[in-house]
Image (cartoon, rainbow, N blue to C red; front, side, top):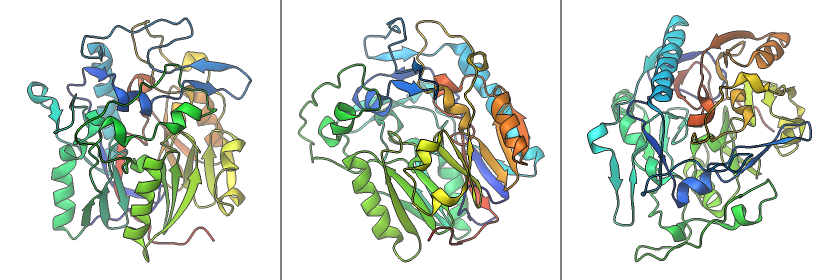
Length: 386
């Protein structure tokens, strides 16, 4: 089919599901620590839980190799790949065509630019670095060095859509030296972080100043309207680019510091007029016309919804990661089977819930929405916001 995806809820016809093959470690360096800096997650009951990399509530420190890599246990990766296969199977059973990215070659898993080098992260959270707007693929400028060329692993799918008539655009690639990053947010944020100081950036002969860096998962797509979250000068530069590029076709609505970066564990549009939100406070930061939509507030997840990990396992997300659901239609939602509270809440709002297994979402930083890139939906360029 031809590329066509304007929103988050129209009947889903084709989707790319990510891969975790040869995922062996997390690499601790400046861009990784900036991305995962927010160290506290308010659980709406006055209690908070640590989840920033390296520090647990007891102050334990995961073991790193000399190059800053924190190994991931093979059994977790194996179980993640099993869960991804199950996810693909469930989507196919719902008559959705599933495409998969090229796997990372374990023998050549390094990326190098004139300014830095990093290990390659597999194309798991494929939502992050590609924004689909109608009939256009937009590869966004990455925020983590190890994901710099991640969209290359989706190229076979992108070429197929391009041959069928899709537009295909790559936003400007950042040099991504230490001086490229806006550190002010992590140094002044009242959201809880960082627990570790962000070191002063090191100079590089390739410094060009602050650059655009922005993930597609910072956007909420609503027909011709796109809500874009901005927390840093890097994000703001990228949204400037998006506004100019999409002028006349789409309208960008800026929200500020809804989260550090991604918003799909804060707010999701399940159908026209209905939002799933982490808390009522999240809705207060949305555009005024969106605040009029019905709100489904995600219930507090139970502690036993998650596996217990060892001190050397790196926890990357808050307990609200299961809010990261995937709609396959305006009334049908894929939800982690390990989150029964959320399933019951959605069923009470007349949604059909399809339970799918996903065990290690807190170790790999993504849920079903992150793991998928919807390329063909039935919806069109409707106007949903004033």
